[in-house]
Structure formats: C-alpha cells, structure tokens
Image (tube, rainbow, N blue to C red):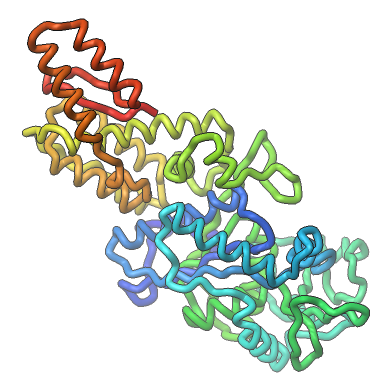
Amino acid sequence: MHLYNTLTKKVEEFKPINPPEVKVYTCGPTVYDYPHIGNWFTFIRYDLLIRTLVSSGYKPKWVMNITDVGHLTSDADEGEDKLAKEAAKEGKTAWDIASFYSDYFITSLNKLNFIIPSQLTRATNHIAEQINLIQKLEAKGFTYRIDDGIYYDTSKFSKYGDFANLDLDEQQAGARIELNPQKKNPNDFALWKFSPREAKRDMEWDSPWGIGFPGWHIECSAMCMKYLGETVDIHCGGIDHIPIHHTNEIAQSEAVTGKPLANYWMHSNHILLEDQKISKSLGNTITIEDIETKGYSTETLRLLVAESHYRSQSKFRWDTIASANQRLVRYRNFAVRRFQQDGKTNLDAPDLISPMQDDLNTPQALANFEEFLSKAEDTNISKNSIETAIKLIDDLLGLQLSKTKNISQQQKALINDREKARNEKDWQRSDDLRHQLEKMNISLLDTPHGTIWQHIA
C-alpha cells in the first residue's frame, strides 16, 4: 500500500508501526452548525481510507475528535467564540449547541454508512488531559503568560514551520499587523485562554493559571496521545489544517515527547462551489438535507466523493451530483440482477483494491468497476459473480449496493404475464404490461439471455 505523505511531499510505501494494527487520528467537526458538503467530502475520505486499510488486512484503531469547546473565529486566537456566537443567535447555551450538533453528527455518520471510529472523543470530556499537556509544555519552557492567556512560544521549537514550509522571517516582518501586541512571535498560539473578567462564559474551567478554556489546537494533541500513544501511523485532516492547526499540533506534541506525532500525514483538498471554497464564513454551504431535498441519496453523495481524488481540488455542482446519481442507478441495476436468472458465465472480480492501495485512487477504482460492468451487461453473468463484485465495491466505497431491493410479487407476476404475451405474440398486451410496470418505476430490457428488469431513477 502506498500513500502520499504531506510530511515528505511524496508517495511512500505504507509501513505501520505495529502491524496489523494501524493507529489513525482524524480531525473531526467543530459542532456549532451543520457540517457542509466540503466537510463531508473530507470525512467520507477518512472513511474510504479506513475501508481500504481493512480490506488490505490491517486492523485500524481510528480516533476522531469532536470539538465541542468553542474556539475563536480567528486562527490568531481572537474574535468571537463560535459556540457562544451560535448560542446567542439561537437563544440557547453553548452546551445546548454543542450537544445538538454533536448528536446530529453522530446520527449522520450512521446515515452515510460510515465505519464508526473506535473512539469519538469530545474535547469537553478531556479538559484534564489538555491541562496536563500544557503543564508539561510549561515545565519544558515552551510557554509564557500574557493578559489573555497562556501561549506557546514557537521560537523555542526549532522545526516550527517546517511541516507547512512557512517563511517565519517574512511573518516576523509583518508582526506589526498582529491583533495581539503582547505575543512574542506572530505564530505563537493560545494553549489556555482566560475568561473575561466582566462576563461569565457558558464553558469555562478552573486551571493552574486561572479560570478559562483551552485553545483550539491542544485538544487534538491531548486526545491523540491519550488513545493512540505518542506516535500514530496516520494523521488526517483538511488541507487548510496544514499551515496552522497541524503545524501547531506537531509543535506542542513533539516538544513534549521528542518523537514524531505521526509518520504519515494525509490531507483532503478543498471542494469548490462555483469556483469558490465552500465555507460557512462565505455563506455558500450545502448540507446533507439540501442534497436529499433535491431527491439524491447519501449513497449518491458517497459516489460523487469517490469520483475525484482526495488530493485534487474537486468541484460541487448540481449537474455533477445528478450525473453521479445516474451512475449509481446503473450500479444498482447491476446489483438487482442477482434476483433474476442465474447465468452460467463467471467473470473475474473487478480490481478495486489495487487502485485504492495506490494512494486511494478512487477514480481508477470506479473506472475498473465500469469496465467490469460493460462486460457483465453483455454476458449471461452468474449470480456468484454479481454478489462478489457488489461486496467488493460495498466494502471499499460503502455504496450499499447489496441492500438494493427486489421487486414485489405483484411486479414479478406482471413481468411473467408480459413474457407469456410476448411468446404468444400478443404485442398490444405486452406493451400495456410494460407501461404498467414503468408507472411502478420498473423498466424492462429484453436481452438474448432473457428479459431483465431494472429500477427507474
């Protein structure tokens, strides 16, 4: 198996620390709103990685965080608290907002047929671990205190910026534009923020430094090390995590352990909508519910995600999801052939695992499946060949073709009546029965191997 490693900027052979176990940490949602389509592209790609590992004989231990502590709207540790902002808008508490959107996210994972992570870790359940990690950083001399909190001194970590190829000298020259003049370096980030004296926050905790709340980055380091140890095999996130969040995770984790936080880093590229990055701040978000309102299933969304490589800049348009839906209909109509006559031809299973093991090359996996379908559609294929193929694509892409439903006894009787009418050359009755089935969203395809029924999209 080969994966592109953001750390080394090249495709490498994957060598886990302790095979067959593979320790995977993925950055999850900040639960202050519904995840948008760009978020789901990234999350589904995590699931595709896990499925590929399982199909390759590995045993992944997958940890995903849920950020239910409100971090600030700015990456510079300034601005409003995202959870508090949404709570004020909805007239609820930050705890209410976090609980609602956390539950929604977990329900959606099941709805989208995810392999559920081994651990879904909530930041609010790990405040003690975060405080403990900050204390370790403090003891090693990596922190300093200013008026609004405890900060990480990036100048003390010699490799800071290497991961994202940051030009720290250039950023230092621009330090005058930083919002917080007390910071020693422009890239220094908050480990613990103090609650404002003039107001009580919904979410705040006591600490050795005073009442406050953790910075955004510290939770991932604390929870990752708690459940997976000091070095993980694979750490995943969106491409926008590279310059700040993951750079800061590396700095604070490796400053404490002296070991690599992760051996392989994988990042999902941006999803564009009308040539713009999809972002809540831009107000151009699309949710699962928006897609379902248009009549598309969550399996259609999964197939749309698989049509582009995770490292490519993908585009979401309504015509592309319509096209993915037509493709899924074709796949489902192949799957229902197992309910019909059992053919005599055994076809070799499509090669899906090789492209998936080649840096999750989902477009090539789909191309191989399409090639297999073209052969199958011209062949009196056996039921066993059909079932083998749909199990493969279900296991790797999660399309749930195996759950495609059979037709009713009434519809089967109509098909048999039509077949009898055709044998008797009663073409008018044959056509009437065909039209009657089409009204039930069942189409008929007359082939040299007999009549095949299909679902109409």
